[in-house]
Amino acid sequence: RDLFDFCRRTDPRKVNKRALEALIRSGALDGLGASRPVLMAAMGEALKTAPVAHADETGMRVAGKLHWLHVLVTPLLTWLGGHPNRGQQAFDAFGLLIACAGTLIHNGGKPYRERDCQHGRCHAHHRRELTYVFEQLGQAWAKGLFDLLRAACHEVAAVGAPLPAERIAYY
Image 1 (cartoon, rainbow, N blue to C red):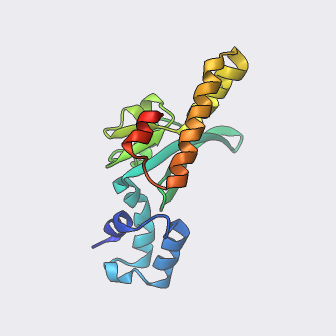
Image 2: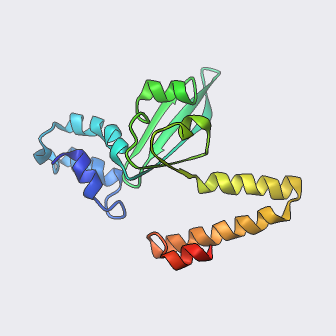
């Protein structure tokens, strides 16, 4: 048993990243056989084994130059890293998206799509793109799809789990 096994078996609704860090700092996970600094460092590696992870990046200024803040998130863990590049160069430098065991939720960009894993599109990106198509291009269908996706998202959140087959078929 190790940190990776613990993260796989932990309900992220009950133990979040802050709680996990507190468990490590308090010594509650000392029985996993690694030192506390090693466990803290391993949190980033544990992201690779998550059943679902969300990856994204956003621009930021560092000493007046454009850099990218990359994020990889699970319900339990969050990893952040700054890099002057986005895409493949940053992924290679960080090494976090080389091995993705589960489903990677992302914006649909090519560097993400090239990962050897299951893929899902980020709902926030869908909403932003549909808003643009409706508001800027005047395409009414985009508003209908936006509303449908929002209703489905709210239903999933209310249930707290994947929807049953008949509800998925409805949407």
